[in-house]
Image (tube, rainbow, N blue to C red; front, side, top):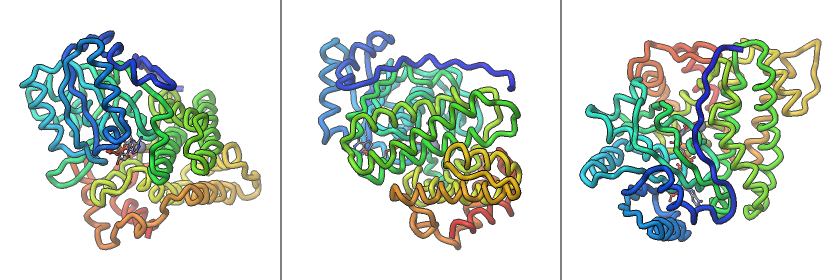
Length: 391
Ligand code: NZQ
Ligand code: ZN
């Protein structure tokens, strides 16, 4: 196991009706003037936004609102939020929504305390300070409620990049599984896929002897495989929603990724797809992951075979471990299909003729030098071949 530090100071409040305690938590974590950030309207329609505002009013907190965050959130609204927060002397950013809303809130929180262009953080500069951020999560997916990351699409070129820093880990996150019951089935499935991707991207490591994190990841994957069909069949299944919601947090706050190298090639390859075609991030990952895995599994056949046996219940073929590894990847594909996810380029509106453009931005955008690295290093030719596997 490699040396590591792990600092995850987010205060989680989990369960039914917990959104009504938002005001109390904002106060506890030092907020007095709050910017409430939300998306395209689901929190207005469900009445959640009103409940949150009431809870802030009950604590005599003043607030203003910034709605309109789009999935695959754009840089434009971040600039708007930074200007507004500076003008109004906001001291706390409260995200009410999914990963896109939370990531926009984190970007605003970092940008307010920075003199330069906030995009510097998305071009490699680490975030060292930010206004405090709180979240009220409405979809189990990105894991941003517990992560030190934020992902934004630059409208000047439509490419997506991430920024990181413990300063943008939420001070608190409210997780009420009942809030996810209004999700359309496709979004529920996309969220499940994203959670599985966060687990796979940590499982694919070159570090030896990391049994504790391997086993945590396997446990979380098994949970997702068990709960996903239950929630797809019955969207109001609170217990299944609850298990998925906590697994989504665990999958991405890095408690199961410490002390090991991680992959993230699938995420990087996917980010070009959701930036260009505006597909759901999880749907893009459903198309991307099997292609990447088929391309790289020979790098460590036994790691893929272990996953196939321990998680997908495949029989180990000691004479032909490659067959076991491939059976595991096929089981993943079948699972993704069974929850309604796409597996091909066409299904997410991606086009074969765009592959050179996708590869160019992927391998050269924002200071990259012709390749991306993770479980294996992938050059332009590899990335082209991987996109072609998705056709
Ligand atoms: O905008 P509204 O109207 O709220 O609708 C949203 C949106 O259309 C809807 N939705 C959310 N909760 C709902 C609901 N509809 C009905 N009922 C509810 N309870 O779902 C749609 C998707 O929302 P979004 O916030 O985009 O989803 P998600 O949480 O999957 O976030 C995806 C974004 O997170 C980034 C992705 O790249 C993508 O941009 N990621 C962020 C990470 C991080 N910060 O750590 C890591 C991830 O790997 C990921 O890259
Ligand atoms: Zn993701």
